[in-house]
Image 1 (cartoon, rainbow, N blue to C red):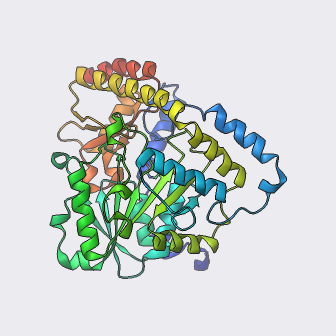
Image 2 (cartoon, rainbow, N blue to C red; image 1 turned 60 degrees about the horizontal axis):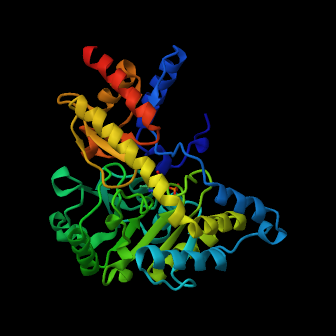
Length: 391
Ligand code: PLP
């Protein structure tokens, strides 16, 4: 075989795909006719709202929207984002210098690494966390330094435990609240401490705000950019995916420090050609309706969370009470790995979850339930768990 056909080292070095074993098991069980209740993936089951779809349909017909879009997002989109950040978070932004459109926040996170990290840099990565931070930091040649998130500290990193020698070499610290996978939301003092640390060492804070709108208590809705001095170091990524059930549409935005937004946009002008204008304008329609739309969505997630809490409590499965995102982080029984527990739950209870170890070594001992199923399906879990107990 011609070795030149081999993927690059950065691909060969990727860790084995943990979810393959789960996918295989799922397929094998489904082939036997077993009905599975799927709490595995973080992809909303609910549809994109009509006002977004109607805006796309109208805007897609306009020839002006059918051309290459502006790399950084069109002026109407950026002005709408500025108004949104002001009204929902109290953050004032310069729409020309502090806002850039993204093809979903995953794209922004990945290209951020390429724009700002290099060989020899350290990336401070929470553990557990969305795997894209560590993977893309590695792609850019940086070395992840993992910050364990512990339940006792509300799944927030302890920056005082980071040695100065590491902090000196660190270029970025990733933060994600409301948090995937734990559902945690931080306290203000914790954020202040992280920002003071980042400013002291000149470290970029990449704030992944993909779930910013999904909080059970509106007092928990926040942007890091409201904190004094945050603008010096923060690049915050927002997404339409979870707020408006738009995962397939690929729309998000980066806001914050103008040098960081500018650097990311500069990289992107060489990689992609922006977001389809009609999709941007559909997103603008979404933002215009957010106040009437969101309470219903949050009500659904609250009912689902409460139903799951009831089931888990009944079966004496301990869990961390989530304050945001649409996940619930539950403990595995003692003496079994999260992967084995996931497999057993699937086989004996027909329940699909995600093993905590898929989010990092410190995720071991937990499984994640995504609340992307209606209450009826959540209640149906009880039957599966009864069978599981006696298996
Ligand atoms: N960040 C976190 C923490 C996520 O869980 C996800 C998706 O699940 C994303 C970012 C990516 O979202 P998108 O690229 O759809 O905006």
